[in-house]
Length: 98
Image (tube, rainbow, N blue to C red; front, side):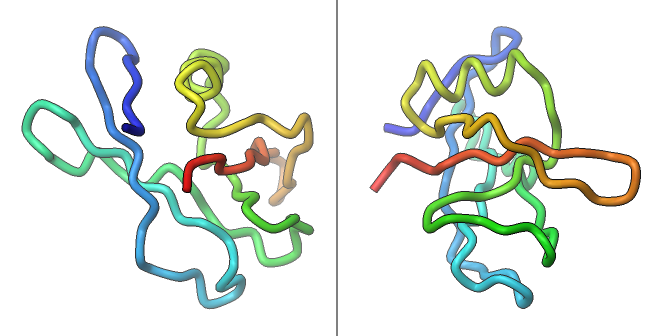
């Protein structure tokens, strides 16, 4: 199951059936609180000019704790690359769940 703990709360990561208009192949990942199935937010964003390999997506936030927990739960793998939008850069991860 795609769950992980962050700050004493168990979350589930779900691949959305939605698609980004600018990149229909990019996985969209939603964060759901496991205890009550409440959607906690969308974890990803689309930067149309970003070059992504199949299965890669861009995390909306760059929290090292979040990336570490997602990797340890075998949900995503950090690619070491970033997508830039304006002055900000966002981590590119590969979705490794089926």
